[in-house]
Length: 196
Image 1 (cartoon, one colour):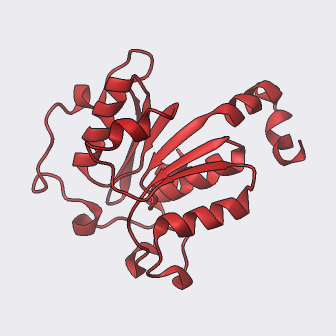
Image 2 (cartoon, rainbow, N blue to C red):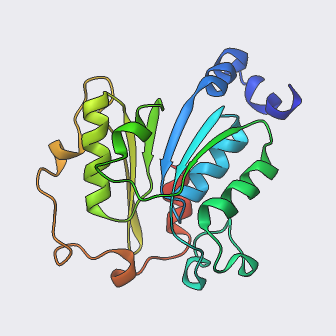
């Protein structure tokens, strides 16, 4: 009870909303600059089940924006390291982890068990895959994206609303929109967008 007292004491939130959070199942695809703040705050707030999809290892270039990781974590799997640290933050959360890249072969199986999907990826192929799987499964998804000094946040496929393909019908080529490996990103931007 005392863990969530600052939320449950909010007049327009209360115990009923906390119980909804506890029953919620949220999948975060990507445990990097965007995914880390999403996971840390949802975990702290009491979302009952968090799913994580990630297969990369921690690299030195990650540390400027992926603040869950430290120099001691270099070379370790992001998924395993994040899981350990998130469990120490909130031992009551249930975690479902997928040490893989989201693919056409596994997307429907993974996404089907969750209420909402958070797209914290950095490539268009995965983003369109998430969109299409969420449309098929009738799941809303929250999208975050970064570009240099700015970012975007939007909710798609919610309650009959537009999908990502409604906004961007055609997948852009890598030459049209460079990713953060080419373009760069200011370290604090993923934290801001991830929290939004």
